[in-house]
Length: 247
Image (cartoon, rainbow, N blue to C red; front, side, top):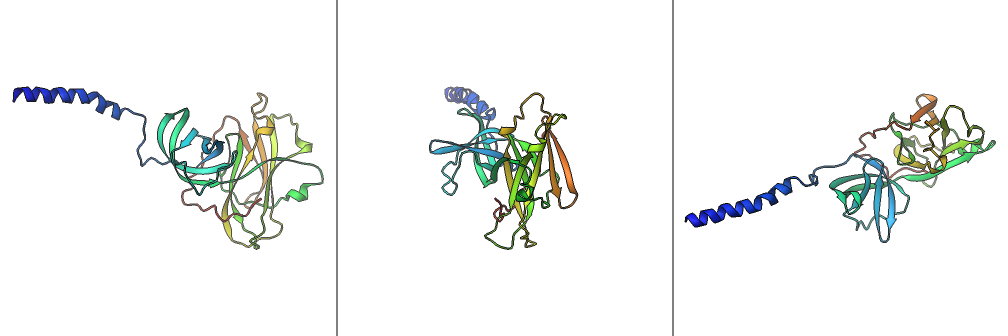
């Protein structure tokens, strides 16, 4: 009996390091869920991964999402369950819980005489729903939908040829909106992301971005985004972005 007791104690000592190492691993709880965050899709072979503005590179373990067609460079708003850190060359392995495509556009040059093409109709945007991250300017707003289901309103981020070079150290841009006088009065959440890679934001002399827009509430306003500032995205759980009609 005494011999059996010592064998049992020895077995417990052998498995103790294994049990301790399980407590110290870098995994997350299955209940850990990220806030909605902006990311860029990157396609590699027959698979894809995400580059999150806040989390770094993400490898989706449920990559067989048959309903989702990844496009390289597509901006998305995503929610996920983080699983592991430093996973096979990626910052995190994640289980995607939701992924929503954003209209993804570039900065356009607005030449004199083309202002009417871009329009300057007002936008309803909550404070904090415009941010810069991952080399993109991201916008979430409440779109006043067009009456015609086949019509799409135009949203543009433009740089005027008359205002390209300024002495204040900021890149001056305008958020333009053209509703083509087609409004239904019904609102839907909309999201768009503009690639800023052509603006040389990383230059040492550039302090940030100044953005003009026409607000439904405050009229013509100018927002300032300094390079070192970070904007936290508000909780968008439950928001429906499937009804937006934008181009």
